[in-house]
Image 1 (cartoon, helix red, strand yellow):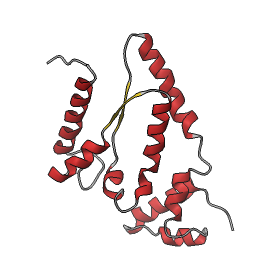
Image 2: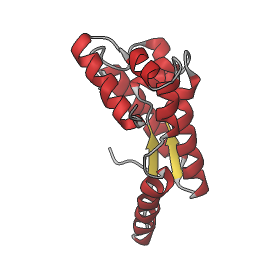
Image 3: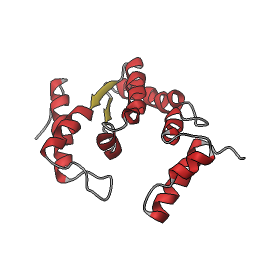
Length: 161
């Protein structure tokens, strides 16, 4: 049997969803000896993918140095995806990647504006995403804008109106 790496599994599952309107991942998982959540676990482990720290954090550290060289401050904004907001309660490992990102940003002392809590709290007052795609509704954009403004003002960043 040919071993399928996680990126290939992701493509196969996406193709099934597009073709059949639902995930046929269980069939793919069974063929590869993975349990029901094995596909997601394999993707979260990033087997066969480049090192996250080198690929992601290296350029951010370089960018931070360039911004600071011009007497500025770089802020990295963490915005949850639709999947993270709606799936995290049912399957908490969905948030494993953002946990790694938070730790990496902290290790580089990069200023971070984390919008996960404001977005989660905002879900109680409305729908932040359109139902058929990943884009914010007007309400979702308002949550993001208000949270960004509050966070930047709290850090002493002034705004021109």
